[in-house]
Image 1 (spheres, rainbow, N blue to C red):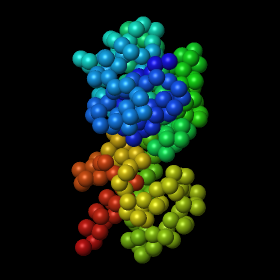
Image 2 (cartoon, rainbow, N blue to C red):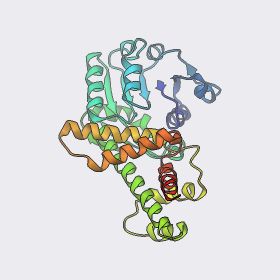
Image 3 (cartoon, rainbow, N blue to C red):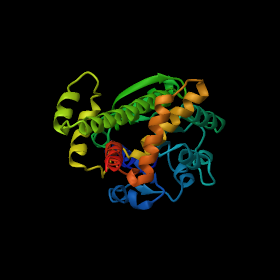
Image 4 (cartoon, rainbow, N blue to C red):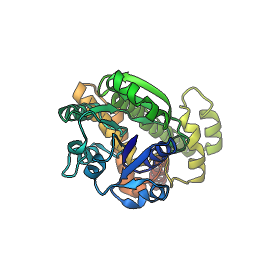
Amino acid sequence: MTIGFIGLGIMGSRMAANLQKGGHSMVVFNRTREKAEPLLAEGVRWADSPAELASQVEVVFTMLAHPAAVEEASMGQAGFLSGLAPGRMWIDCSTVNPSFSRKMAAESQAHGIRFLGAPVSGSKDMAAAAKLTFLVGGEAGDLEACRPLLACIGSKIIHCGGQGMGASLKIVMNQLLGTVMAAFAEGLVLGESLGLSRESLFEALLSGPAAAPFLSVKRERIENGDFKHADFPLQWLQKDLQLATVSGYETGVPMPVTNVAKEIYHFAIREGHGEEDFSAIYDYLAHRSAGRST
């Protein structure tokens, strides 16, 4: 099978590599060709546009940063939807809001294309090890047809329901990821201002009932002040918090905590933390606190 992959960032590059390791012929496109070079060196083919990619493949995967990028790649002037033959499959692994995912499903249907919204849960290391979890929204039959492909990339598949349901679960997960990280960072800063050592705070809090498991993974980054080479860039988590608030607005659900967290991350981006790991929200809050105390 020939597979097209669009979006070769932190996660997408590793996902595409695992599809190739699974024995599939690959055609890729990325906004900057440089990120594709390691794959091209392994025999993956390059397409100069999403439309050119579409003419060569049976399945298209997209793993893009935000809804606007997904819409441009699929429906823009050189978008792939118009180039895919009827009956082909589009699997969107991007983190988008549910209403947008349903919109892409409807556009796909209008072109005779089958669509799965299949965002992933997991880190870049899990992507490299093909241990991601897929959160899938779409027709059960389409999922079964694509299950062998998803198995090349992930170790678990959760069928969440119809179109948009995979995006719904991913937005809830990332809403919690962002708000919990911000609250934990704020707690650390408060504890340190009260004279507690960071070591004692970590030892007590991470073994206590209020700590999410992922926070233990962030301990080393915070202790070393090393937020570069992000597992998940702060700017994209802020984007996901924004999408969560959009979803809350669309469904009439108040999102006061998420709205505040979203703005805190926005301030951190303005001070240069956007490309750092999202745990850098601690660094932002700590420096803001230090600035106020001098």
